[in-house]
Length: 99
Image 1 (cartoon, one colour):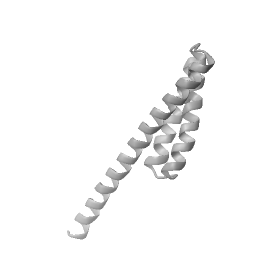
Image 2: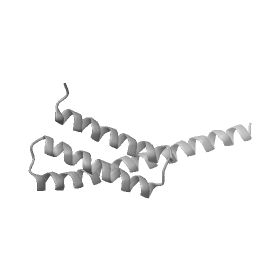
Image 3: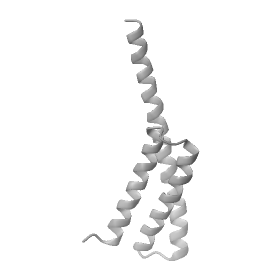
Image 4: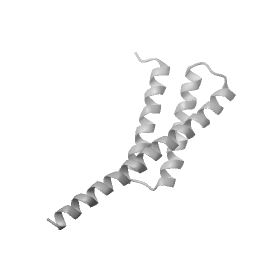
């Protein structure tokens, strides 16, 4: 059986992946992805900190801070790869038009 720490780590990883995919695949707007992603990422990291035996106030602080850091990182990577994929598609379309 999975330990509580492992389970909360899996939940945190899934929330980070979903935040990235929302932005990368343009399923939601960036502000909506930030708000919802920040809420879920902070909650899951808070649960991870509690599972690791941290105190309540420390777990809240760590959850909010790490949630913010990882949410910004996931959104930044999603935006970067979304824009770079569009550039490649535009270049390929331009090559097809002029071929």
